[in-house]
Length: 95
Picture 1 (cartoon, rainbow, N blue to C red):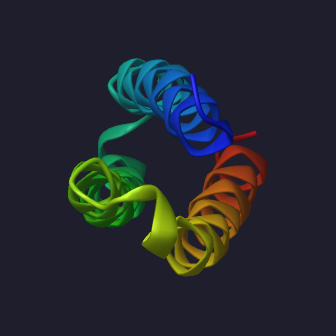
Picture 2 (picture 1 turned 180 degrees about the vertical axis):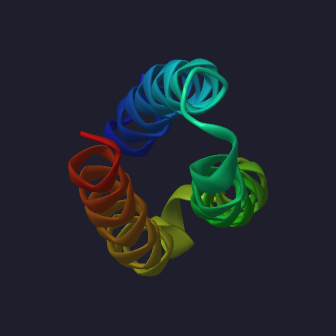
């Protein structure tokens, strides 16, 4: 497997992990008082949107040849860091 293929598989695995984290936050949001639920749901919807954008980029990257992989990997790294930071902030917000 190429280094790009391994990188791609790692990103898909990490995305699965963050999907589980978003679902955990969703369950947690369902347990808060009604007046806070809407703010939680807005945060979670923002996370889902970022996740979906990253998934789109990952899917597009799967169609790229090895020669274009460096540019794609850089873009995916940026998108990944943005999602990771957003989830970190959401977790702090929910605590």
